[in-house]
Image (cartoon, rainbow, N blue to C red):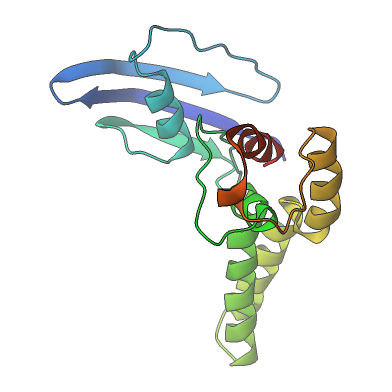
Length: 171
């Protein structure tokens, strides 16, 4: 899916320190952008704003089409207790959320809910677009290609920092 990300008038601050303001940005298919600045300048904050992990002080971020997904690799993987590498990959790629959405629509469809067929159809389309149908097969091959030589049913919290970083790359 081809997508465009548009940021208009973004501003972010930490306490009384303004990191940036009036920031406008358009990123389209095939664009390659470098983000350079001193430590503490707001690079990570900007990236978190663009993917919706944080909210800007002012300004807007839109993605077209609205259902498009933006990948984001944080500096530190978000490891959750009890979560396997496989579950981490499903969560980070959006497949897990799409599957939950699809299951809720299936339950509503079974209960005869109005509009549930459309909800299920769009949920299935999103799950497929995110690669839910073959995530397990691709995950095994990708993890091996990145040198992540662990069973994907191993818990994320048991991985070394380097292994967790590779799992993040795989996501």
